[in-house]
Image 1 (tube, helix red, strand yellow):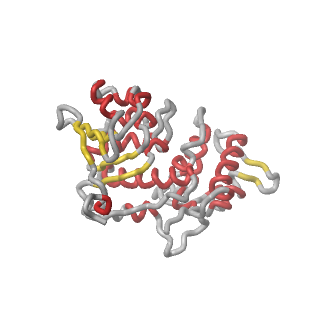
Image 2 (cartoon, helix red, strand yellow):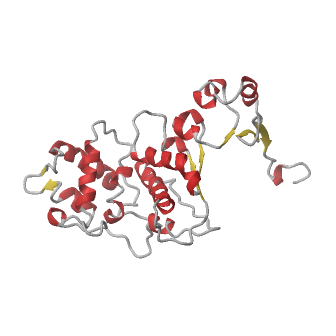
Image 3 (tube, one colour):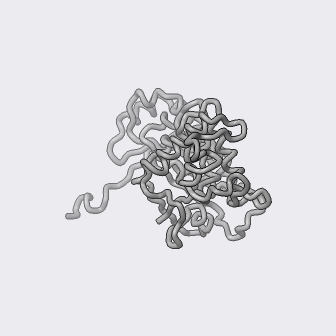
Length: 289
């Protein structure tokens, strides 16, 4: 069982709000102010001080200074961030961590409740970690997935890592990758995190496996950096997308006629895409009851 207190999340608020439109980066500026205010300037770790000293959990962040003045009942200006933006941030965060949350946001984590980033940072060779996000809201799923990516990328990309026994390679598998890296112009913290893994992860030993119904629904740079592509039966409209330009017309025609268990695999080691077939489960094979 895992959960997120404010102490676990104050440097990851950008991931939590990745799906919120922020064309002028005003929310991003406020998140930067909050992260800096809740950090100890000497160590860079958790340590609220000064005007942020009263902020110790989600409730105090939302309903106490410096974001909110309980005497006037108004949101307050923070640095160069206007009060109206602070009010918007409080409304959004209140909805995410109070009104619509699934239960993963807590004021303080109990001893038996895990921190995902701490557990992921302990990963060992030959170990499989499964994180269940099925019952989480969209914002919570984005936070958890982004937290995993950011933790693993930091382990492998940052010089001077404290871990000397890191596995040579780590594989991250995620279903519905298009939810976190859709093909849109405006990039967000979660998209940037996925792009970092897709473009530089291979050289570091970090491998990302993504599954989705339509490859055209994934960011072009993510699809373009895939070394291995596996395609199931798809319609001609889907195959007309730019993501499938590497396939010739004959292969595309074959893909529209694939049967159950048949897939087309494309990799640089093969001159042409090849068809692979998954056998039926043993209980469905002829001769078995």
